[in-house]
Image 1 (tube, rainbow, N blue to C red):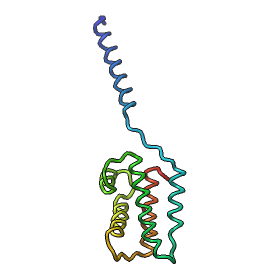
Image 2: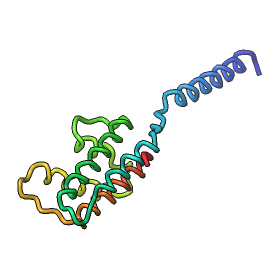
Image 3: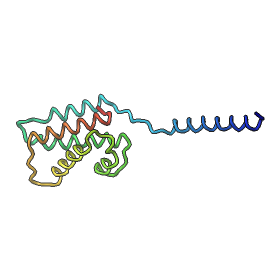
Image 4: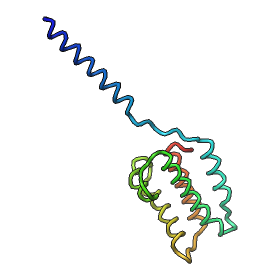
Length: 139
């Protein structure tokens, strides 16, 4: 081999190494949540849900939705609203349709005056929020 070919091969290897290093440095890393904080906050929300007190049903759904939205923002999911963030984060959840159902229930609570909720609906929505937070790695 002559010197020019060897130099060319070495240059290609060096460029390849630089490309690999650049890709590793710019690769978006998964966000590290304060899992203990999220677990504590979610446990407080779960403990507020009282089967004998219908006033707690809506409050716990709204709180669960807020906590999930906080986690999405903290994870860097773009969007101005929770709905926009959900659209951009569908692949992060094991059941994105369930997360949408829980969020739509929250929206109905926030925008409808005479929303009647059952304990089953509230507990179901909380279970969905819990799984979504697990899927994100927040709890």
